[in-house]
Length: 525
Image 1 (cartoon, rainbow, N blue to C red):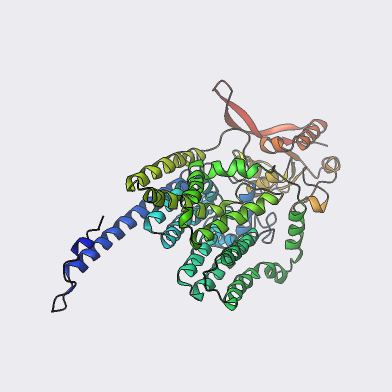
Image 2 (cartoon, rainbow, N blue to C red; image 1 turned 135 degrees about the vertical axis):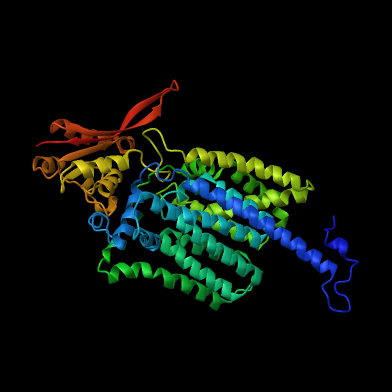
């Protein structure tokens, strides 16, 4: 049907005096109305995104990865208490930690670090709108932003002090700029994409996969006018910016840090089976989002353009790499979430038009996909209960409380042994006491170079170098062998439980019960 603007085609655009015609005024009014509706809707989506990422943000303390990045930011800021335990140069690039350190100059509370990460998350939702609108139209942009706002995968990760949230922000910016290059074919957009890619690499080094995605997109899109020198210049900008990462520790006198970490990553044992991503990530993204995106690949196949090639490339390359890579972290695939949300939104908006179903069908589809996804996010952000959890999905119940008890009630200079390095990190961050994990391998190829092994725990306790042993249910579930080993030292050296943190768990009959999750033992030689 013709629009209201088209209905005014019989009206002259200007009269002989040069005044604006009724047609132009009507067109301007329609455009203004669309912009107002779009802005108001986007503001509502952004508000929803902020609520899901800030609700009870500080209910549970940091997990192991969070304390490492927060500790690095604190060390950059100059927090003397944490500097001995968390050196500035540890494993990954420091862009996010450097940004976080600016806020830590005012307050190092947990909620501050997580709020900064959540800010990147909300900004990513807005970028997804720009991506969807620039590739397709404002309706696709709004639906994509809504799906991103309520997506459990992005909500959960962006509520934590992790590198993956900021990395996803900059990778989405890179995809957006590559899309602008695809539309205009002006080299300036390709150069800008190179700069954004450099920031992505400085957020997390594994995002080097984005270079592979960009190459796949440009190689598979034959109708783009790409001069070789422009491609080389864009890549040079990205690589030049990333060079800051290896050069910084060299200039600071710590050249071996990055090399040792790289060797460890290359020789790490697999931590999950091959099916991990296929069972965990689609549920976290939302089965509805994944299903609709895949449906669109088939239903809209006749409308495939370079736009879909761009989105497919940024999804397939990371999936293939991390499926082959032995180490599989829950949050590693987060950068595929924005292009997946745009593909799902494209299906929701365009498929009904292709089938002649009308716009109401698009509204119904949006509701059917977004509402269950939002409910899943709401459930995911509630404080966890129980003594098991998947790494990367949230904080550690009882960890902050146990660490602060240690800081208040143990002598300065006390040393502790934990089951694994994860709890050792938490003890050091909140308890400000030296801690080492039994599970840390003495073989340099099989351990994170940031951690020191405990070659002879018996000798350490007998020599009174170690005064406390810390048991936790989370590490015990992952490393039962080292749990038994730690408890054997508790028995052998007259261990006495001096502090216990508990959590509520639901039993098989539906009743709530209290279960210990962290126990601090004092031992005597």
